[in-house]
Amino acid sequence: MTLDDLGMIFKFVGGLGLFLYGMHIMADGLQKSAGDRVKRLMGFLTRNRLVAILVGAGITAIIQSSSATTVMVVGFVNAGMLTLTQAVGVIMGANIGTTITAWIVSLSEWGSVFKPEFLAPLVVGIGAFLLLFAGGERKKKIGEILTGFGILFIGLSFMSGAVTPYRDAPIFSNAFRILGKNPLLAVITGAAVTAVIQSSSASVGILQTLAMNGVVNWQSAVFIMMGQNIGTCVTAILSGAGAGKNARRASVIHLLFNVIGSVWFGIVMFFYFRFRPQMAAASIDSVEISVFHTVFNLVNTLAMLPFANGLVRISELLIADDGTRKEDTHDIVEQMSRKLDRRLLNNPALALESAVSEVIAIGIMVRDNFKASVTAIRENDKGQIRQVLQTEEHINQLVKLLTSFLVEVGNLSLTEAQYLTVRNLFYTISDIERIGDHSENIAELAETKRRDRVRFSEKGEKDMERMYDVTLHTFEAALEARELASAEAARRTKDSEKRVDKLERELRDKHIQRLSKGKCTPESGIIFLDMLSNMERIADHADNIAGYVLEER
Image (cartoon, rainbow, N blue to C red; front, side, top):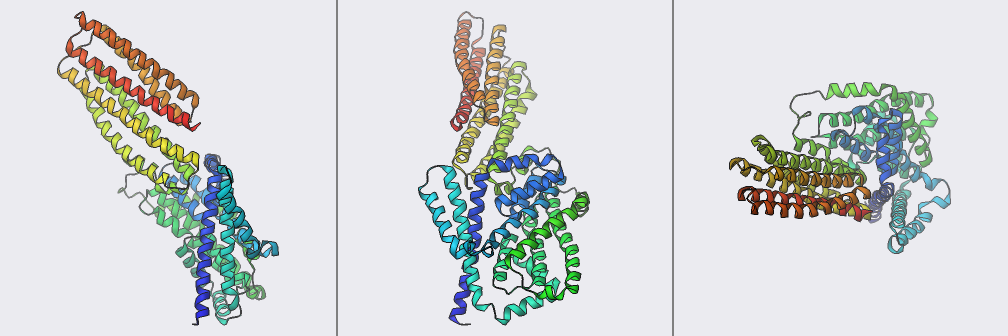
């Protein structure tokens, strides 16, 4: 091997690196621009399977990776956000959506104006200018998309330039002739390359680069592409390992769909090439690869669509209930762990939505614990006291789990608005945890009241109920504000918190008057005033939560 040959290898590897990096940057920019659109697309999944296919294709076209879409689907199934029946449609659609990348790559053969060496520098220049100098988040997103698009084309140019000197070399013609004569070897080659780089879009792009230089024949390209469809399943299978049984079934469905589709279509193409040997040996270009890749995935989806329920049943037979996993466990920590599946991190908007949902779930637990703590102090109920203390332990565990997930979400590529929401969710979790601590304090006051046989006066009981009602309303309004991002609910929270402050001062004065007149005992007075103080602090934290929501408006 000469130094020139080594330089060409380096050039090809560097070009592949630029191609992958450009695809990543472009997908990142597209994903940021899509934002809530991906969430809305996911919301359509409950309609029917055809809609699910369209959603799968749309999401894959946005994030430029069928592997990433399928990994997300595995995560959604594991988190209980999708059923297996809904997942089948998305998986089928992902294979259609991934053909977009092939069409982008083939742009260079549509005319000289689309060639990488002509278009890419201009696109990168415009994109970089927007990223560095343009004002506004939307323009920066466009700059990111253009920069990634341009780098992708430069990578293609590098790869093509590295192959060009060897287009007449016997190694290529012999290799693709062997692959053409041995379809199984071609399928294995396509699957292996895709499995290694974990992207069918990228492996199809490599094949198209070779095709641009006229070294790939039809027969070898067809069977390599079928192998690429199988190889892309590796990412989802790895993702499903260690997940719940339904998540593993989703990854198996993806594998079954691609393997069965490749087998039946491969058999058809094998006999077709037997009758058309001239076409089998003819060179294929980049555009023709895009056309075949699209037709193959569309036809395969249409052919397999009637058997979607069969794929679900086969996956259930292959991944049977073994009784070793807690699929129906009522353990709240286990349930949240599943809902905060790390695979959701493939889409920041959905990961953030899931985090908000779990913040509300913890908030509801804390609200119910507050109710139980007041019931305990009202009824001197030992069981309620014990339940409040046990639930508080669970809440602390959930807070740690959710905080860890939010740290990972915060490290994703987020928009400025999403960063602000993540920051405020950290603060919100802290405030909710403090409300839980105050509920625990009230339960401990209930234990003291029960143990020492302390009784409140009739007026004291009524005052406690008044304070409780307004405090509970304040906290519930804050949770509503956070869940719906509602400014109106946030303003109601703040108004209610002012009433709590005013009521706390009023009830404190009234209670001191009762103490001075001997209508209440000093022991009951201490417990009552501490309880008022804890409720007032609960309302303060609810007010903080509402403030974060208003900050995001």
